[in-house]
Length: 408
View 1 (cartoon, rainbow, N blue to C red):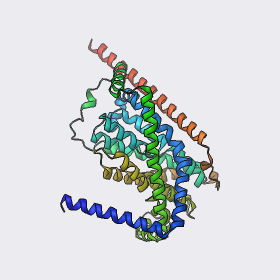
View 2 (tube, one colour):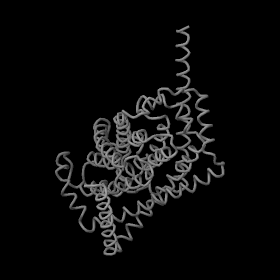
View 3 (cartoon, one colour):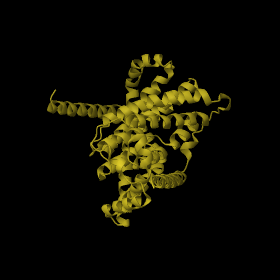
């Protein structure tokens, strides 16, 4: 099949899917309206206030050169482990604290600025696209499962599998031309300040322009995220109405048997393939042992769902980073997270202290509380990374001094 024919097939397929969704919305107007309201409410109450401070601050930190400063100081850790520049530590921390799709947005920004190349961007994206603790601990762990211990098992497995995935992807593109670049970089504090100053001069915007662009771009990104959340909320409800989810559930039954999972998890897992939050809610409401719930929830949170994949694809538009490889990494992330969380739960989980709470208190947190929590996370991230960078700088200087003394 030649390239032109492939493009025509893609165009026709997308047109058919769009037409089918439109017809289903017309056929089920009430259900579509209710699901759209649910998606809009989830975005306004959860995603918007929690993610907005991270989006604004990340743009400001990139524009002022702080990320270049951290990149120089933290390369001695990130390059040997992941073969990524030090800026990947900043992306990892911001993604781990704020959640999807923050990591993809930062990777796209650095790629467009020319600070990283395609290979580095693909490596960073493999382990710097994670869920956030507010969702895993609050919404899923306590709000849905009613168990803080289960939340800890899910989070530990999620972040551990992301790190393992990063170690695996360090071999991706091992023959790239720039693979030796960071071995020749000088990791001094003065060099870090120089790189920060050069990045600030290269940016060229005034502080007022930088803040204005940060707010404007962050709002645009939030609107895009909100649109995808509402869209997939409607799509998943329509698929339930026409029985497509049940059809997929029957296809996946052999996999459930292989992993010895209860059939009651099928609807949640199938729905979660498209929209993670809805799938997590269905799984938490199923009548199965909590160990199986944690296994299924860990997979969905690591996989993240086609809704998140669509957001990431939109953010990566304009870069040459492969969305297909990203989706493959998320599948591996989900599988490893499910296995890791189950192992952690088998060792540390104590059923005697499990509590069941039907009140989804996580969703009752006010806007101001979410925004303040996000800003606290940001300040903690920057402080920890700066301290780590300064400690590394001191260790490197001490090692260089000892080498000089020995040679003398």
